Image (cartoon, rainbow, N blue to C red; front, side, top):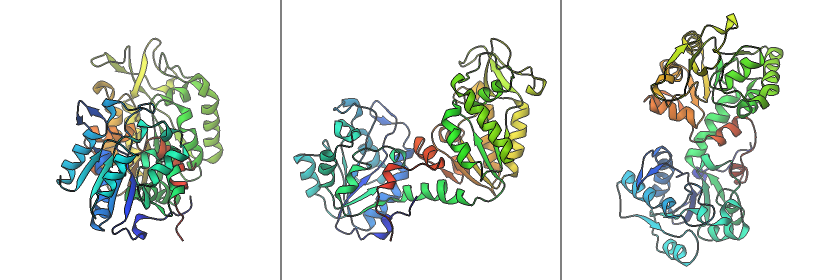
Length: 403
């Protein structure tokens, strides 16, 4: 991806700066329950405030379907942001994102002020990347900054269309950091370079494995996707989740690994249960090397004891670690040990560069209170996967190239 203009390169004093942020956060009632994405946007907002820009924030929340939905208003996010910045005097909210009300709110801004506009997805033109809607957003500002990495894989009006209507569009500090770790650091990683992959579908990860096969030294596979790999090799997986449509992909990746001389390690054993719910009976399976696998009628829900020991030892030897996808159903305590022990092993390897690739992996690390022990936690799920696969991100590709 070509180097893009950064917020650091622009003169913003007194300018109306439109900043696309990722404020798509969980809300219960009127309270934000996880403010990670809001907190990650603060460096960019504080940078612009210090430079005395007039800051106009664009964001979405949920899937309102192109029409206003009361429960998906950004007003609770605004109130939370105001608390985080500990300043109610220079932070404002507008219940519209285009039109006369939004225009008047923007005109009233002074240098250093912050204005959050209402959910851009309340308009059908947002997800349709409608040119008219893009132009209406763009006329509110003079400079565009994309700092919403979690939405950078979406070709929407506020992430892509808007940049064609303004002379300069640049990355914010968060996007800059995401690109540094997920792209720059992995171009020539410190070795050994270990990739730890989990989650449910092989198809979700095939692009990452293929893209990193030439750079990685070893892959460790866990999560439900592991049972598809095991099934392809004739190992019984009981009633575990397998993707029949992914059998060909799994076989292809096993062959690619063998031909490339890169180890792709699969679980030696698993935790199995009769039902996926808290308090369910569970037990460790026999080792898969005896080809006994998961018991008929039981479900594999976590990597087993022997696998945890093997994977922890591999993690301890790694110099660069990329992790995407939990190794089991970590949300349920009885099935969380594999994911937790892997997270603890990464945290204990303080000499490594550890990159956690967004989504459930980050949620798991934070649930174990280990986030501050990792080098970098990505804010993007789909965006981080796409970047790791080497595919373009529309919200970044359209930004002004750095000269």
